[in-house]
Length: 316
Image 1 (cartoon, rainbow, N blue to C red):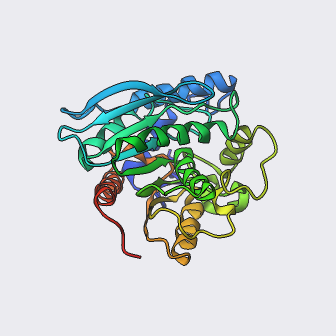
Image 2: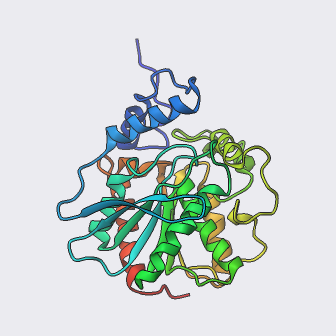
């Protein structure tokens, strides 16, 4: 009997298809049926299953930063030479999943290879803490870094990329100085994740448009706020004066359009942008960086951009 053809073979190379299969093995029933607690447990297992050892020489310390609503947990990664700048990193997970351990190896490798300190923030998760709690925590961590006198970059992946971009919007509204740069890895930035319905990307492996809408509603605590660029950075009326950006999109991802559109509106507003779109990658490719040459190349580009932006400015 002839095996059925792999429907992904047309779009994705064998390494990424192997990554998808390995990721799916953590969800043997193909669905989260036990609620938020079950989703978090499965996600934590997934992250642990892909976690790589920290590079030698990187020192790590857990602490907290103060906030009026309570202490915000953070984890600082320091490269052997100390690093000249600090990257405030916000983890992905749909505003519902993840924490300091879920992206520990990503942060450690960024720290080592880009020669920057990394401060990972363990922001409060929904549904226990809905918008704007996560953004409030990220702002508290950012402001705690300013007295150190080092250049600060903000960044993150997926929901974390959203929070990094939203922090830049909030600082602009407050009339505060922008960070050195915003580094956004497959970020979600639109108030309408279903706008890509009917496209191939809407049902991509790893994340679908319906998944995005589900997580967004949990983050909002119900109705999605209209016209709030701190909730959806693409909803802003103008984009001038925001931090220079390095934006990394995955071609087979319902959030790819968000990344492309954000790069376009920033460029139109005179904001310097480095934009990279990898057609052969899916959402969550950071975890594939040690088993896929395409993901490894994309991560190398993130490292290069982080190191370069820590030292200088992009040309408009």
